[in-house]
Length: 149
Ligand code: HEM
Image (cartoon, rainbow, N blue to C red; front, side, top):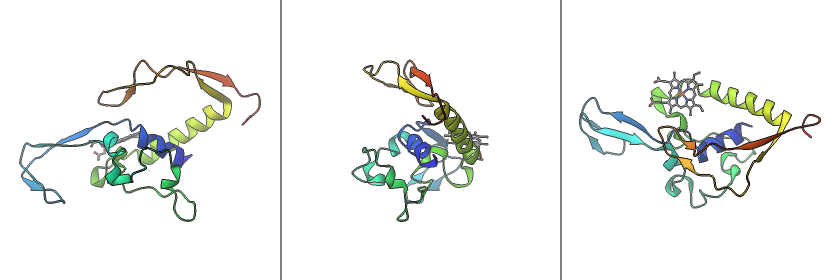
């Protein structure tokens, strides 16, 4: 479940861009100089599509990229999987958010099967501070007759 949620946050990170203003002149770890008042932004949505970070197959659905050689889920560095930011100001609610998503998904997917209400309708993003689906994603929910069936 952790792997499925991570893949979802990787492909459809709800944070498109996150900007910071420099309080003073500084040099970033790669040697790039910034001046007081400059704005620096990182883009988790775009970073989740960069071949330089994830390899040429970045656009392929390949959950194995998150598994180690023993087949266990291996989280990527938060500096390249930036959905929750990284460093000292990393999201404090990350583990809580994962737990909520796991509980919510298990209850919903255990009780219902979901189908797109219109399988032919093209799904587009609506660009905003947080990424949204244009017009919402309309689903039909079918109760499962017995758990998992
Ligand atoms: C999928 C869900 C979530 C995502 C993608 C997310 C993402 C983020 C990101 C990107 C930041 C850094 C913002 C910035 O400084 O520019 C952040 C900060 C933070 N998040 Fe979350 N968050 C999520 C859920 C939660 C939840 C459920 C909580 C609380 C229960 C939470 C609490 C916080 C707090 C307190 C900070 C500020 C940390 C600091 O500045 O030291 N987040 N989050």
